[in-house]
Length: 358
Image (cartoon, rainbow, N blue to C red):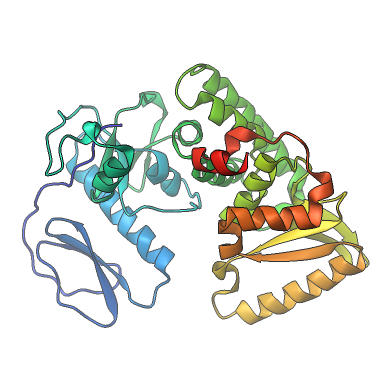
């Protein structure tokens, strides 16, 4: 990975800000209706002040990516940026755009010294201040597609690169999401679940064949483990995160979207452990946002009662509880500890997690 750099200046123009505007040259006047974000020197984007934080982050990321692709000749969106363009849901979305570039900058000293002479922590701080991060990994130019006018690594290449180069927790969630895209999962996927799973198996088998070409190289072992565990069935990054932690810790029986027959029909658990008779539900803010939030809560309460009647205990987990890995492991141990194997999938841990939990 090479250093990223903020892009150069653009021509000045006067603009009145409205939500969603891409503003160039000069900060627009403040308005209580919009939030203003700097894309690059002299260029700004506005979002509705009432928009959820995740929408504002995505708008800024897309604006920086579009600007960078316009100004950097030969640039290709990669990693998180490519995943976003392909329709993935990301656990964390940096406001930085990630690009492959066909040239290598010479490392120039900054106020704190040359980038690659810094400690990993200081290097991360330096890079986090950039609007664009340039990468130099090998890419297959024949698998580059155009999405919304931006050159982007193709879906297969994006999956393999994310599985190799992103931290294990981010990679696992991104790959799940992209496999769902590849399998054509839609809102009615439960009606044709077998077809979705079959399409995903074919895609993953192709991805593993591509990965064989990188055997022994950086990230290949992690990528093999992630591709082995990926599913198109997780409907949110927090479902994927629960499953990642469970599998890494040795709960190899954890099932995504486990089907349970109740007296009123088939119901599904975000993550299920059949032998333990437990269902784990990931309840994020998005699930309850919008005008139908109360109806969703009521339907969920009825569904949980049906599952209990069928002999399954439902464990509801909010996003902060899932983020707390130590706490999540305590919950899993309390409710399904008897089903935990001696060995988990260690490569699904991040290095920090492996030191604490493996």
